[in-house]
Image (spheres, rainbow, N blue to C red):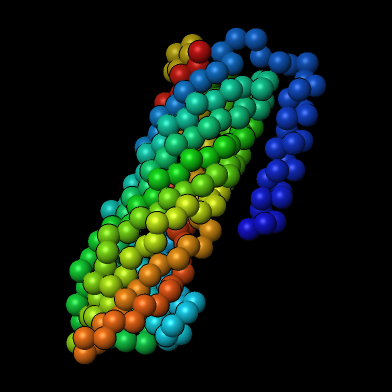
Length: 231
């Protein structure tokens, strides 16, 4: 994760130098806003024990996943732009499984995350109306999960995400089509991932409750469609 942060910081610095010295500085339509909706496809995630019972670990499969985001951007020149983004990712846990216990009862629930990012994007004109773009971003995310109650017939396990903010990053690429003078329709692919975060598990058996800490992260593929308006 530190390597990703260093590489992105280096690329951002190079891009800003290029942007500042470019002779192609854009004079009009230098700021924009965009709104995007996306279908998300989260990767199967693991919940691994870091304290307490080392044998407690789980796997989650997701469904009904979607994301929405809004961005405010500034064009550096004809080829580079930077933006701030606010987003929200939501998914339902389809299945919660374990390699060590047989789960006989599962209360179900959703996993969601709000996030904010600073992005840098490069535009490559393909025609008068079509532009390809690619880039990435770094920021923070706040994951949340409905408290999950699991049972194996002998013990109950309450699983809940702790209140915390974590590092997040993304890579993205897509195509934009100029519908009108200041309005673009765009479609993109985004890979989004957070750093590991802590999950609290409370195991209750015979009236005795024991806490255990698990760790997991969120990672998702997103196929998005949105509109961008240039001022």
